[in-house]
Image 1 (cartoon, rainbow, N blue to C red):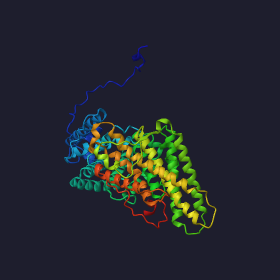
Image 2 (cartoon, helix red, strand yellow):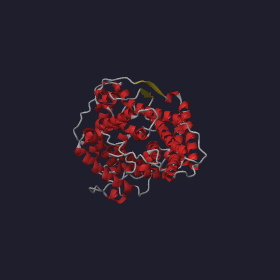
Image 3 (tube, one colour):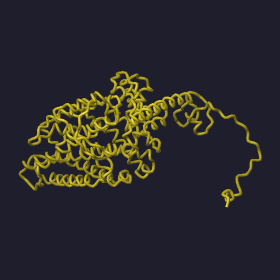
Image 4 (cartoon, rainbow, N blue to C red):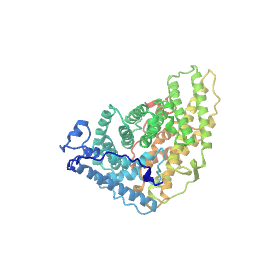
Length: 523
């Protein structure tokens, strides 16, 4: 049967009167035109936008923004194409025009070929579209421009651009506080959460301290509150909400691990976010979540412990830590082959900008190759968590040896020290491998300017823990001075080549501290 014969015979009644002609205005604001509403064309804010408290955008403003963003996106696409084909990069470094700053920003943070659209990093790839969809002078618009200016100013030593970034950052912070007082629909949720991520990255670039006691923690805590209010059922249905929410959630766990301050969201309220059809990712995230919870109990127990008091609580915590450490080890042996990493001996390279990390008294012995950036992040978290747990075990074991009361868990100090050295070395190898592997992809990486900043920034997830651990522990028969010097070289390398100023070892080590992980004791 002909498909048209199946259509209903009765349709809308034919109009009996001619429709009165109204000339369609093409000069109204873009907000009214998008909503198909008549605009009274009052400037700078039309009547409809004034009544609904919306940002009134006029064609001239938007076309300029479209051209600016399209130009940046096109240039970023060209850069990405150059990366894939091996053609020389045309980065046109430093002229401080806003277009140049945005072009560099999208290259540095969203277009690298090694950043696939995966659940934990796809938000970075969406940054050009996030910016394009933001209204001029909106919270998200200012947050992107603040980070873009900070990233450019730090990397190319432009003091004026850094001053502009600081001004935009201050405006964005004020807008963020005001926006979070209102009610949120899906678009507002995405705008606020993305702004929180952007402003957190900003602080990681420009802050000279570990900054765990600063705005970054406050921002992520606020984001977690919004995540909890929004609910995982709504979030998981919207790809844009999911992309940014999973990043905020992982940042929350990271903060819990390195501060020992606890977690603001229960596992039950977020566990669905960790089930993107990847059981090993779910298991990994659940284990590091439990570890972050334990860090809070451990920190509290150590702060309140007094010599020769009952060690029952510390014994119980230690037993939990040993169980978690074993479960993490079992996780590492059970991941699918596609999510493991390949190891080969570290080789020399003639690339000049890498020499400060290779010509040192000690350097990592092996390089790693990961199937994706997501897997690299998962493994780094794995080694970081086990470093924290074993450093705390090593310290607590010293308390048990001096204690005159029992019961005491059975701990082998030599085994703990061996694991600790192994995990810190794996972290060093992973951080260096990021740059060793990228220079193999083509001649365009012979210059440091061709390296996207995001690859350096992601090392900050683990670098403070690594640096402070090496500064604090003493391992029998092992000289750690070479490793400490190498970490200092990496810190200097990130600042000079990628503009990342965060100093992961600036917290002074207290020889009399009762905190095994020094970051725990500085908040």
